[in-house]
Image 1 (tube, rainbow, N blue to C red):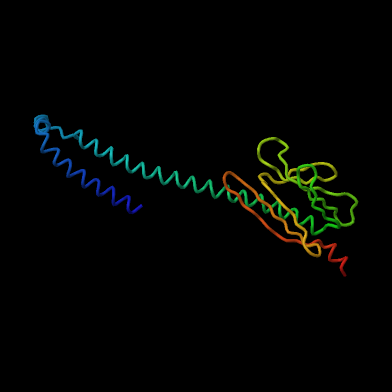
Image 2 (image 1 turned 30 degrees about the vertical axis):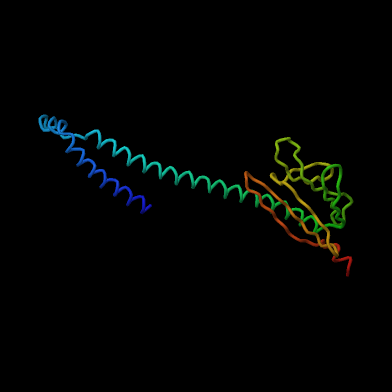
Length: 195
């Protein structure tokens, strides 16, 4: 901002010098001014003033545009991170309280089947674009009823490790920003069975 102010002062100073030279060359205009007694701006003064104002507004517009772009990138990144985190935590909580967990391929989509402890039903977790909008949603199907929880999940994976330790990876996208979230969780019922 300080550089912009210095630039404007320099342009004003240079403009005055140009105007002095222009005044000397425009003798006819000078004589007409003296005859009428009316001091106004010359065409050269107006052009230089418009040039300075144009440069000033160009710089301001550039700063504003850059701030808007960076705001948009940050908003998209935060939105993608939030979506990935919500999906990852939702699956983590379900696995933590599960009696049985299975990662299976049904048709062309991966589904996480979870049977909660002490229950006789199985919930399914998956991503799908059911609305054909081009954006995938993360679903929890409880008692055969699909419930969309998070929008913008591009990919996910659940890998079972040793002793019921699951690694959950979720990739979310908002705008042009893509974010991944990885967490590990162990089912509590497995802890109790080992005792």
